[in-house]
Image 1 (cartoon, rainbow, N blue to C red):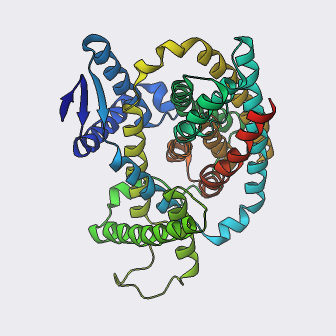
Image 2 (cartoon, rainbow, N blue to C red; image 1 turned 60 degrees about the vertical axis):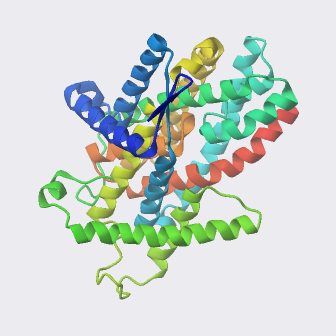
Length: 408
């Protein structure tokens, strides 16, 4: 930990430690405050937002900004998506083929609507089209990574000098709204339509049930799951490097997700392994690791938001995000839920869609995790949502953004 030019730099080890503390604070707050628990607000969101506000108060009082080394956070993201791949089966993928295509179609149409909404609201403030796109798929569905990648080009080619600040501000506030949207929408749909999971006794994709926590998880079971994640991660890294050589650059967590799927489904279940155990797909230990990785990742992401950098942009951004939030809720409740089947899986998908529509893939997964830990598992949702959010969205966005910049 070092203070340089009024910036308190927190090293990697302390960042992870604080992320764990934030997660526990969120857990205690959710236990103490009924509506947080009732509406399935993810625990890392509760704790992360509280700490980001506290760091903002420190900055306002002292002028000292807190900056974190987030390298370990990105490793946790790879861990999490690898567990999702390991838990997937071709049987479920085939069963999810039609829902996957439906959700992807809805998402693409929604992305067009999101850009048109951003452009329209920006026009009301006499702001350029590019600003509206920064309040559209560039920063919302695209997230911080896409906003950071496109901001320099928008600043240079379209004369938006503060494009980076606008993009990051929209992505940050969008992440907050997405984190708070999914749980309440799922609760509303589940309660109103009296929905229940088809197989409530099944193992969760993320997290463990009360019964599993009572029984406990053996140390070798846990280490075997870690070994499987590392094996899949190595294959995913090699796949990522091979695709990069061919000119296709994908985030590492995407190729690790696919490597987990391939290994789980191509190697026979009784294939002899060094550990002497079966491949740990859909085991309590794998679900526990997924929960730890996702929760700590999101806690670290939210606690590190520098909210004070967004104040000057509050007016136009608030207007754009208000419109985007209202449209996302309407589409989620009246289109996504109905088209996806009006059942429990559809309600869980809606909580995930709430995450990706204004936030990012990890937010969607955290929303679904909080809902399923409260109401029961939904393997279908945990297969189709990450495939749409982690892979297809980036490809579609890469085509949509230049199209809108050139034609609007």
